[in-house]
Length: 353
Image 1: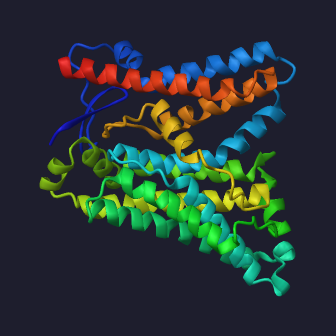
Image 2: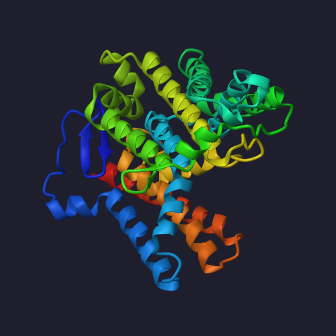
């Protein structure tokens, strides 16, 4: 079995045991952890914007809106983390989000008297939720089967799903956004709060994140994910069902995209068909900035959380500081390229040992 390298040293591909680098001190292992450095970057960014705009940036309202605006992207990014660790990619998550939102919205319309879902009850909302998540899971299953069984490169498969999911959403709605979202859904999941004012959307994203961390870092499923990303052929020879596992990984990503679509529907109160064109790239950027290697076999959920928030803090800080919006994608691109360069440099340093 080959080895992979996580944030603090080489680890067996099955993820069962950590092996420290010979001769390295605890501080050297900590200093070499990519999660530590990206965490420092996030803290410095937050501190810098707080100094520039002390009356507007470090406030409860700004933090709350930042968390809400990042929640949907974080749910997408958790699924993307698993895909990229297997050395795959999923370009379709943004369009699957739209498709799932359309299915959920239309389901609630169809089940409501007169087609007006504005005053629909919890039974109708629950049906819309199930259909939205199932719709996302369907695309994930299609992606997984084509990648794992048909052996079509994931870039091509998910690029095809990107267009197909968007086209299907437009066919269902005629290209017109659905706006009759139940008031109960908007007032609860969309703008509701629990536990002392924490937005419901943030709590959903937190639950998904904790589940993803548990699944990736403490279970056999997570160990197999790392093993396949490190060396799929070696994983297959060791008895891991690579085909089945890849299908499950893409299925999970689709299900999370469906959940994100329902969350987006609750927050905006519309299907936002024209939006989310860059959600796939934003999710990939967040995962890669967080230290997950595009070459597979390496990554953490904690790193993804930090990586997703770095672009979000940049965008929010630029808006509050009055920086022209045209600088936002430039800054995010610089951070992304730097993260990939750091990953490559670390891999080369590891290979020389």
